[in-house]
Length: 199
Image 1 (cartoon, rainbow, N blue to C red):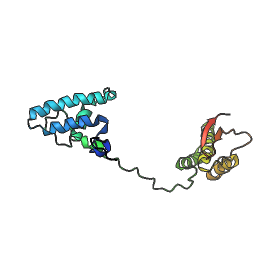
Image 2: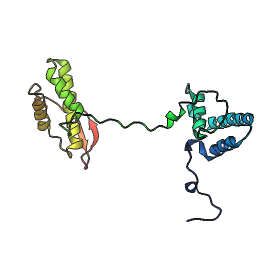
Image 3: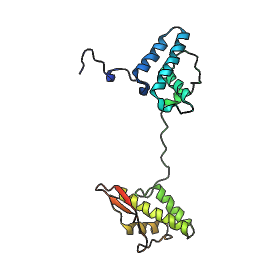
């Protein structure tokens, strides 16, 4: 719907940094249009003071002033000809898109347990018997059960965990289900872990 006299944000030019608002952007555009460099400089310093009021939560940041001038540089589309009090040459890195996170090259064999559990299996195989291995076994078994609850459609069978732990550690770890106590998990209808209680 287009009503004469009404100006919607959706019809306006997209802001470079919306957190500062459209009025700050208009001030910057005005500063760019000034022909006198001294006037542009004064205008830029006034704009910085206005920008300070928009992000007061950042004032404890050691690089706060640098950040404001970097933002001014970006919002001016690098067209503001002034004497910059800070080096703004790296400001464009602030808006650079992050590089995609590379996926692990090695294949995850046990998707329902995940890569971390696979690594724990390998660790448990080589650990000497003792309290440290017992503690890691307890953590691994409970994490396996949590993962089964999340990715196994609510299946949290203790025997499956014990059998898998023995199988994937080449028989090194044998859980005695008569004495081993798992953490209790409440599972919602969609199979995801809702809460956790200690026995």
